[in-house]
Image 1: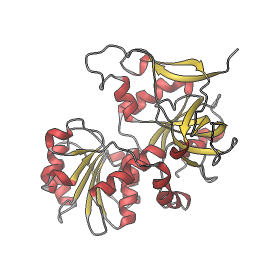
Image 2: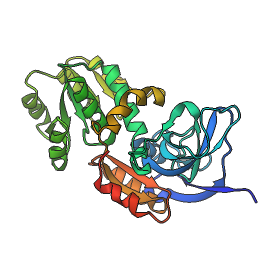
Image 3: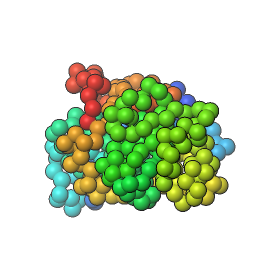
Length: 324
């Protein structure tokens, strides 16, 4: 009997209720790949957009069941032909070769993983790859430097929090939109928080009388016209969440950088505590639908993580009160 893995997938488009955990054949790594026994996976907004069928308009169901998940942390349990850099038993974090990280096992390209530091739990490590790479990439695209003022929409989400901290590390002033419950935390990180809703433009101008030099939109909630107005130039605005970007002359950033390149710069900040990623919640695989329901509700502080440990052990629960 062939070995099996368990993974989260959906056979139709819709809300979190369409998700189910199913047994599938254990994947075998090809050249340049490793197989990871996944301990934890990060939940991302892109997962929900794909699950709802936003990239397949008019279709009720995909041609075949679709998995979910872009990032993970776990232990290598098999290596593909020609792989010499990685050995079985090595804890790693990174991106999966396919969007199937919410599973017990998945394949990863060797250029898309890095060693997991001992200072991080698997749950903390799984929260890092996508948010860190995205924030790092978009700040580079915006050319943020010391002395500038950056506006981050959805500053308390995963990408937003990393962007705030990286920009502050560069010497930039940061204004961040967020719900009031997250304002004190953003202040701790050195950002000036402003509340969503009516009067947002006035609140931003009051918080940044010197003007806004660049905007990162991680919210996708119709803030691009305001962002262009505040900067005076659509080239100074980047979004990772608004599919109407082109209509406003704004760049939609999606081309990912190699993860090792990013982590070479950022991992020292993570290891010494200069960059923190709080976990909003940790859910076991069997409750993955609840994890995505919480993600879809929004107004998060940090990341939601799904663990494949059964049952969820005390160490996994403890990270809810910990920051990276």
